[in-house]
Image (cartoon, rainbow over all chains, first blue to last red; front, side, top):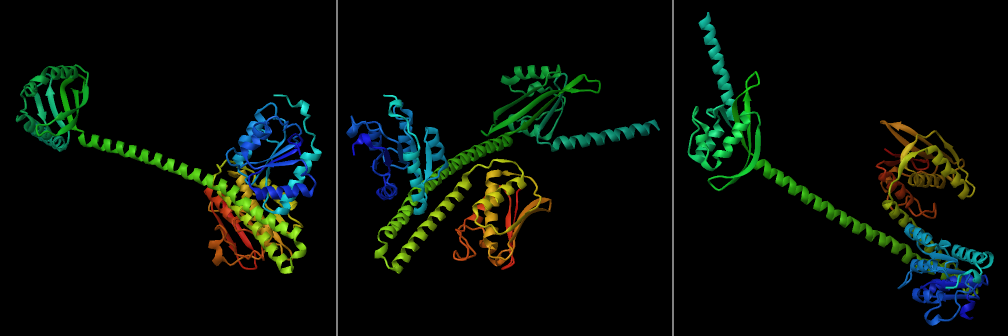
Length: 153
Length: 382
């Protein structure tokens, strides 16, 4: 899969959590155009086509970014802030997926402009249900902004 | 007759003078009374002590006071005394180094003495030693300062502790939940992908793992809620308890499958409280009442309030399984349960949360119950 064809970006540092999430996506055939990145800095490089993603039209077809909050080096809230403060990336839907229901996190995420905030349930059945609902909604149901509408930086 | 009266008057005057002398000599303040010419009319015991120990001189009645004043103070003293006689009293407080080297503070007052027509006929000098008063004041000041410093230190410590607690709960909610989810998730993976390689015992074993991972998730969540309630600011306002409880009952009907209990809601008095938190109290108490009465033939719950010693006491009563009051002490502790999870599910945090919220409102919560005869929970919100 070319980087320019990525529709779903999953930013999650815990490999086991990522594995479980990917399993959900695959179960509903939603994992084909999904890229998993386990590091905050690399996630920013991808979103802004920098570093090893230099030149790849990475955010061209992105329909949604699933973002964990607790990441090493650059945390999820900072990634969210950068996405939502740049003209060229602010229209990409971002769904915060996190273990914490800390009020301060929820408040900050919405202030930075998250499109959705989800607390991952412990129970895997519920987790599967929620992930698949979210994925179906953001990948299949929701109409994303046209790439043309994304102002070129 | 006339002579007798004179003697009587004189006798009275003598007595009055003796009384005045006694009062003057008992005082800790030095008094010197002068006439308009600054001649000494009289002075008291303390004034004598002072002039003898400091100047080796006795204050002699009818001698001129100016002679007693050391030369370097003479001119300013005369000015001050003349001003006082002319109607401008003068008050000052200053340090004085005694002969023995001790430093004392004195409060000195020069004021005119008036006759009954209001004209000034002499001068009163009153000097009192304020050293002890001043040092007590200094002590109070330094005590206040050290108290203030202590309060600041404690506040800073408390802030640090709060920050640490916040960081702790934050990390608990992030870091403890993820492994639990992974345990539950990968157990499910085993069940899904390796179902035909597992015998019945293996299948059941994985179910146990899953159930316990979920249970621990519930426990952690409840503990986090409890910690949050301890931090949340109380936002008090006048709350219509009937509306509040009605909404709790409605929500309970919506979320509980086949709510069999008959719930009777009596008229409740309004309360000054935090609506969100007290809603949580009613919700926890009601879900307990529903849980512990659901196996009854006719589960019945009554919610109301009564007046006791001038206080409003809210109560919720059920006809459920109840409990033995000798365990009532454990009722409101965290993770304390009076029933096995297999009988009635739960984490043992619900009543701890109730207790925390009511206590934060400075109220009280208690219970009354008998095994198999139901339970009543009471609380007050002063």
